[in-house]
Amino acid sequence: MAQGDYLIQNQSFPSFRSDLNSTLEAINTSNSGTSRPTSAVAGTIWLDTTNSTNPTLKLFDGTDDISLATFDYSANTVNWLDSTVSFDIVNDLSPQLGAMLDVNGNAIGNGTEELIKFSETASAVNEVTVTNSATGNAPEISATGDDTNIDFKLTPKGTGKLVLDGLNFPTSDGTADQVLKTDGSGNLSFTDVSGGTNTPAFEAYLGGSGGQSVSDNAVTLVQANTEVYDTDSAYDTSTYRFTPQVAGKYLVYGSIQNESNSATNLKASYLYFKKNGSNILETSNSYDNNPIRLDIITGDMIVDMNGSTDYVELYGRIDSISGSGQLFESDTQFKRATHFGAYKIIE
Image (spheres, rainbow, N blue to C red):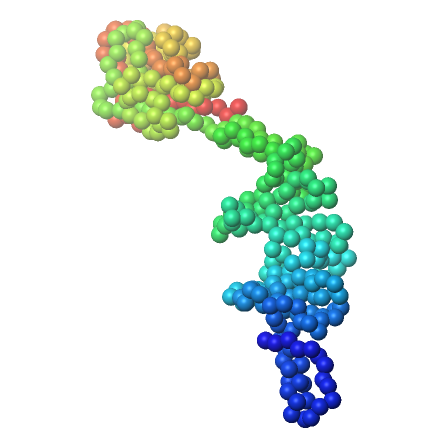
């Protein structure tokens, strides 16, 4: 690295050659030195090597030195220093990049105002901030990314909305299990899911052999003790109660296979649903004029449940001539003929 006076005097050849080599070395090293060359004139570019690993390229304007850029010899990078440097992305219709764009926190503008500003901070690694700073305080859009996600947000949040392709997103989160709903005009908001699923739900039947013995003409709790399914563990196979912990309307259904002790003994059969111990449904089959031995009675209804303490049960009653030997038939006699079930209705 060298500097020269750029003057070659009339002289002997050896001295001429030495003077010429000195001038060429100054050109070849970009007039490198720790101070401006003494031969500098307006327009002279020289490399300030005061910092030997991060020298600064300067232009002498005839009075002062203008710093253009610094070089990082370790990273092999260039940092342009003049903050007025900008790219005209408004009028340049075919910009091209050969590699990554690194503007080092400076703005991309049209020479008059900032249009877009990219920045990264130590506390927000992999974050790109785009700012419309024509007014000086416009909201920023931050896109934070890692290997799996891209997170868009307004910073500062203010009252503005994030708009993607004409869709206005809400400015705050909803509650658990809510979904986004559109008003048909591009405005999105969080709302509760309408309808839902048919749960809690269960079905159970009277299992075992021999059936359930019942007293004649007595309202008796049906012991549906074997579950087919129970989505929310809401049915108790020891108390034979369904106590859903979700409020709503439920379709409750049941069936009882009744048997008396002889072919012409059964006069009538009854089925009841009780809610919290009180009858809410009673239905019957009557055979007064032609008693029989077996029948199946069914029932169903819609029941409102409060989701905390309400429960329903299935009851039956057999009215016979002889008054003894009555059964609710179990699964071994008639496959699941005596069963009890319920499920939540989607509203």
